Image 1 (cartoon, rainbow, N blue to C red):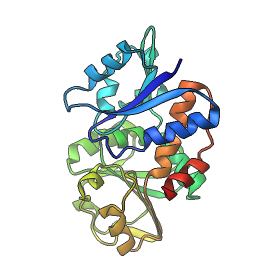
Image 2: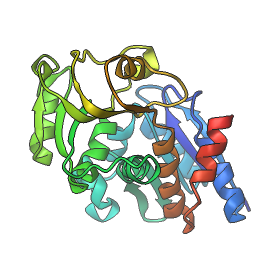
Image 3: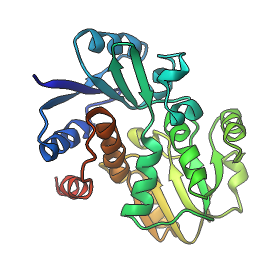
Image 4: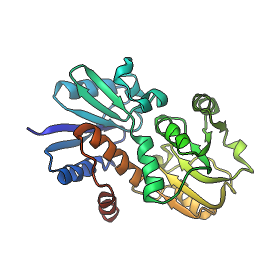
Length: 268
């Protein structure tokens, strides 16, 4: 019998997750289905409940529902370490005793930046833009990797709250003037709407690396980084594949080979 999985988001039509998990299943010789589901802004919990009733085994969660996913369970035994710290979840496992929550974004980001792209984070000055579910999911792993982190967000109060929780620095975009960073990561969803955070010129240190968690297009942030001195620029396709691989391992007990999948997606 085919085991059913899904990814829930809004928007969702751009998602490559179904294609990725089909390739993982082929590698593992496993019979699963995986679909993309558009949830209304106020309908995330009801979609999850419907999937559970229909016998799905689990689902992924993407923009803008990662913090909504955290609210699904208030029982600590159902929350992974990363979810407890991030207050956001992107991987749900449906079991008889309830919904078990995980967050694989952080490990996906670290594996892509360090293992796939060869950018070591220890001791680097890292600017993380955003204070939503995506940023929350990667802060603890970035800190554990030895990065010196500053969080910037349009709503400064949100950046301050997040920085205090993870014991890192925070500031407004205006306060970035005159500062430089070795790694600049866009964890906002601005690329989906063709916008970018209001970064000042001169933000990239010599040899700096720019990373946008969005994928599938040249985002305004990526174009800005190329034009303002970043030595290397990447989208988030590798992170998407790496976090998906960790989700697949949680669900299926098999860790897929990610590099062939990343290469195939780059060509598609």
